[in-house]
Length: 368
Image 1 (cartoon, rainbow, N blue to C red):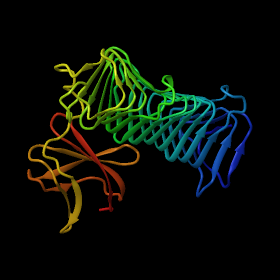
Image 2: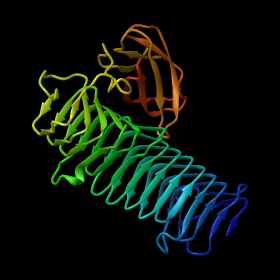
Image 3: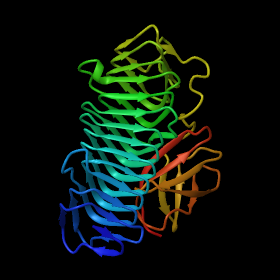
Image 4: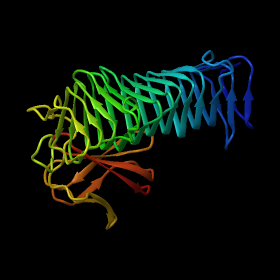
């Protein structure tokens, strides 16, 4: 089936026929809540706008998705091999279930679930929540931004490969299985937790030479091993095992005793190197003199309060991962906010300080 012009789905459709191809001049849309389920190969070079798009397997791993156009859905699920060189947006959820997927362009979703699947990212991958579950593997070579929460559990694994452009978790990262950083960098703005170690190996966090993680807070109930660098801006807690060749630096220790962690009831191997000079000079920091930044609306304008003196950058990030730069008028602890999107809704407000230290707040902004 070839679609070369505009086609509306008048109702839910289950397609079990031959391959479905949408050309550059074609579009497939569904008013209301109408959805498409298909067992056929799906090739899109045009535009698709559906409530739900479900790409069933028919014969697992044989059917394909090839997208070079635009796919916009509320929910999308796939159980097949596929690749994206266009734009895929799932407003609510994007589920990979027993599938293989490669992204070379742009994918965004509110919740992304990688279950018994391989997701290979070489483009831009943005999700509020990213869950890697069962035997799932997320492999980042490009830019991956998790705007709220990264969860890796069961036998899941999250890899940051050599040459990755950016790997950033603006909230918390909870790891119950594998986290591998290969000669690359990863940043976590909130908590990095290695959770609930019942046996050692499933909770291994492993860095190869040159790998580094910068996080605001760290709690280890599993294993963390080197060689690599772990830089902590605030709270540090070890209840598990820290292995040799790991370079560990807590910028704000509450103790002057080795290994200079806020809490240590686990094991720190003597081979762990604690904070050598120059080991944590890049990435996340702890902004000085920052109280509790607040976004308020008064006198018909938006204001930020609780700010330090000096230069500051600000931006709003919408659920599709788009950043809207804001202008801040003034230099004091209260500054007027100018600009931003005209559309109301929930946003992440990101404040960037000198040295790339950052704070991220969730806020609601009415439409202008």
